[in-house]
View (cartoon, one colour):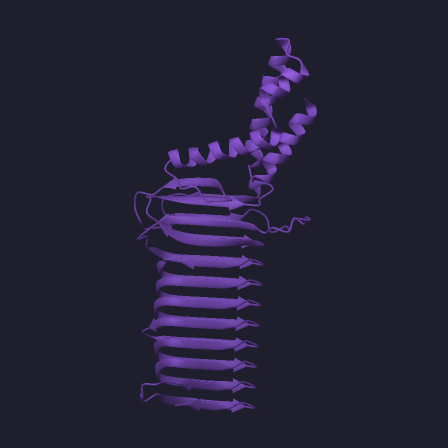
Length: 317
């Protein structure tokens, strides 16, 4: 039955069982097979007793999904539950640091944090923890593990609705991020070689830095916002910023739609800025090889405090 155990291990890996889960399942079945042999069962009888490895792995996966629900979690199709943390007070900070992984952060209606994953070869490469004041998800080592896998590692983090943070800090490399339902005093997003999408964000101060990736905002309320981007585009839609929007772009375009702010401070090199239904009170513009264009249906007095451009055009109407 050595081949049976090898095939079972292969099928369990396909279904994203963790290393520890696979080891436990294989050891249990090896023990049961040895016991059955001691009782005199033939190889044919053993095959009938334990069945097909593929079907067995699928049954175990479905049972595991049921167990997730029984624990108070929510099953996510194609994902495996990594950790669950009960939440008694909806005030905690968030720290995320990942390399070569995609992440989705969202709210749900349970009083617990859930971390789901897929396509992870070894869960020991990651740490998910919660001490009551800070939730952390990170890769334990920055060492890259190269493989022939086409699927990227993916995480889904679900937190209770209404969570408020003092700091929400995300650092990602070579991975995309989707973040929804964040309320925090300070928001830090640093992304390299990956896209970031934020919806439903409320923050006092937002600091965003992207390199070789796009940033999309939608339905955000901020007191101030600082954006730095290189070789990437920013699209902001339905944003209300009571203070300054300070942007510094190199080889990237900035698009602002149905957005308000007190002051727009824009520095751009080889990138365009387009505003549509964008209503700042004042603007300070500096452009090198880039055009700046703001067009609104509603006529308002947008005061230009500073304006300097080389090889570019500025148009506000």
